[in-house]
Amino acid sequence: MPARKDRPVQFDLPTIEPTTDLPKATNALLQAVASGEFTPSEAADVGRAVDAHVKAIEASDLHERLARIEESMQHR
Image (cartoon, rainbow, N blue to C red; front, side, top):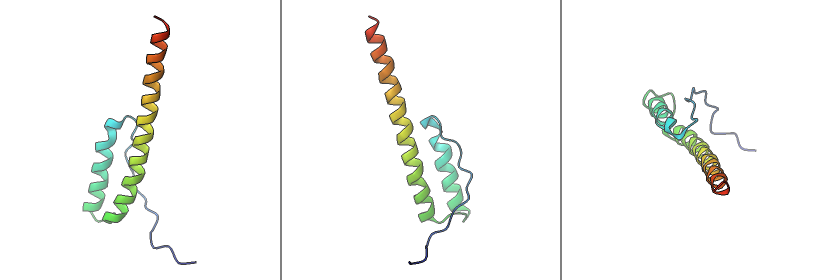
């Protein structure tokens, strides 16, 4: 089995609860690259995970909004 070429990264990523928190997370990633803490490819890998998390938040938010709309339509 070939040896792993990547390494585990230790990083304090700001919490992304509403998607409006995303700029804090991307700024932290950019600062980590600028300081040499992450390579650009490591930041890209973390960025893909952040993107997946944001998409999950958006899907959940959309589901909740649709449920509220449907509920209000039933009460008319």
